[in-house]
Image (cartoon, rainbow, N blue to C red; front, side, top):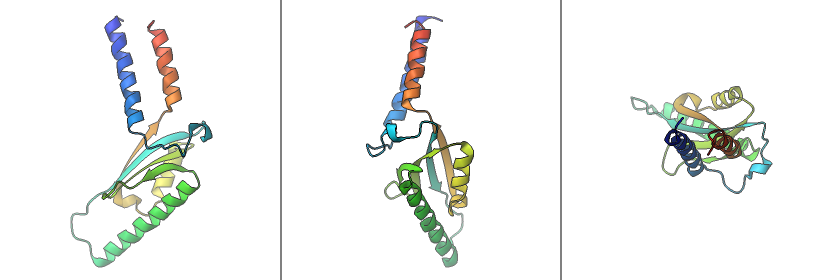
Amino acid sequence: MNKIMKLTMIAIAVSVSVFMLSTSLFSNDTPTETRDASKMLYLVTTDHFLQGTPRSPEQTELLIEQVIGSLKILNELQAKGKILAGGTPSGQRKHVFFIEANSNDEVTELLQSLPFWAEHRWEVVPLETWSHHLDYLTKLKEKLGL
């Protein structure tokens, strides 16, 4: 493997790390040392998809109740520490939050238990910790002889 290829691999790995850092919503209220390192972190983004036809007043009322019920549950999960940080971007129907969970199955069950689950599109991204990625990059650099 030539030197340019090695440097390219490191540059890509560093770019991914910088991207993860720049998109983080973590605040100083949730220091890493208080997290259970055996649990996984997930970035969850949800967006309400638009219905093709106008809703009846009854459907609108049901939707509002689903959203209120879901937000109450999300707020309780944040108070219990299951959701580390999150919220609704201003003026949007999206919700963005970080979940700490033992497994993908736990995340699936949590999200599908929300009243507005069927009305939203979901994106769930498992995250690795910066310390793990730093260890990986350090070992990669040593392995590549850089």
